[in-house]
Length: 66
Image (tube, rainbow, N blue to C red; front, side):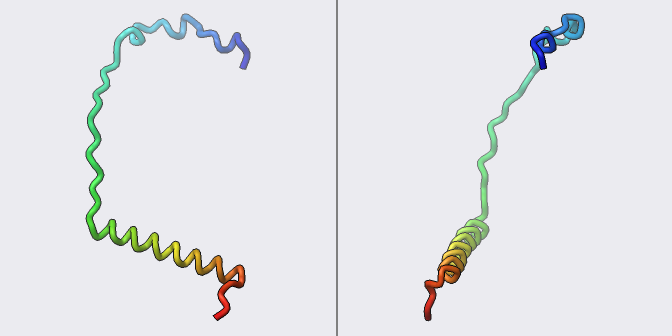
């Protein structure tokens, strides 16, 4: 892209719609609510995944000699 390509063509942007303001309404987002059972399941699942990852890594390194 050259500098000449970046120059706006006045004929293309001569619409009167560009002078009017757009109305934008902002709303406050609702707080995220998660049931206790789902939160507990997520925590337990993350812990179990961490344990499995640690045991798998130790097994691959040959550190589990039981």
